[in-house]
Image (cartoon, rainbow, N blue to C red; front, side, top):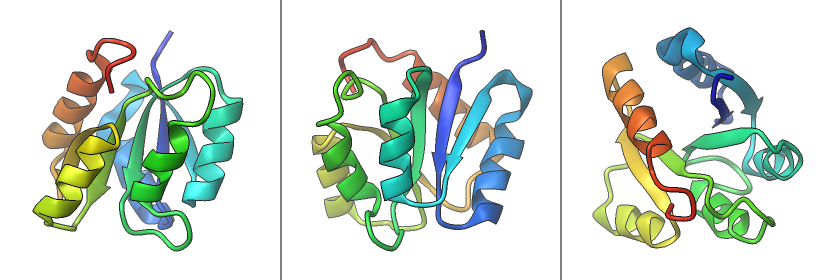
Length: 127
């Protein structure tokens, strides 16, 4: 069974690019907002990884990390923040909230694939 990845971004083109870059080795579910992503994550028991944009209206990537921790059984699901924000303070804060990695836009397919591969290798329970 292919690992399922939740792709969260308020821009459909960005979600489509991530899915295209990662290709057929994964199954995908999409969310257009942090709020929608929390609902999907809570309902879908097969999501193994979340790729989440940092800058979104409403619940942004940082708030998503905070709220994800309270979903039963989902604290260990790794989250990769995907963003154009180059802010060391935000990176440190995201890591303290359990972000597995911080991938800067624009990224190459290989950078994204490497980040996903590394995050999926993380021991369960250690985001």
